[in-house]
Amino acid sequence: MTRDERSEFYGSPRKVPTAPRGFASTVNMFFVYVILSSVDNKFYIGFSEDVQSRLEAHNSGKVDSTRHRRPFQLIYYEAYLNEDDAKGREQFLKSGSGHNFLKKQLRHFMSDLNIMDSRGGAAR
Image (cartoon, rainbow, N blue to C red; front, side, top):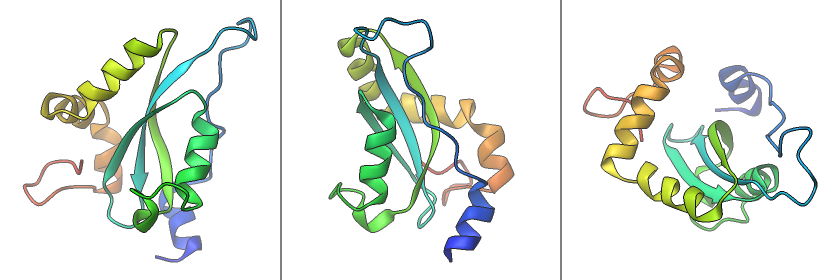
């Protein structure tokens, strides 16, 4: 898939989230994110305090586990005030039940892109 085809497939890039306006600069936000590979149409689920920088690291090949699957698009995230809550949610989303939750949560997005796995369900 060429860069232009990927851009057309995913649409224009959007600004990645940061802490909401009005939050004091000392408040740390912790993010659980889901990115989608344009190479294999599969998810990668991760945790970060800076989603923008982490997405850039994934797309620039600085993350060994995703280097061969880039480029990625951010398709889902959740923000937490507590790091342990975010890490717990990341672990849940990586589980079978978590994958089922994401399939339901993102069903319209995945249907629009016709992203399916070999069993006819949404790709993980």
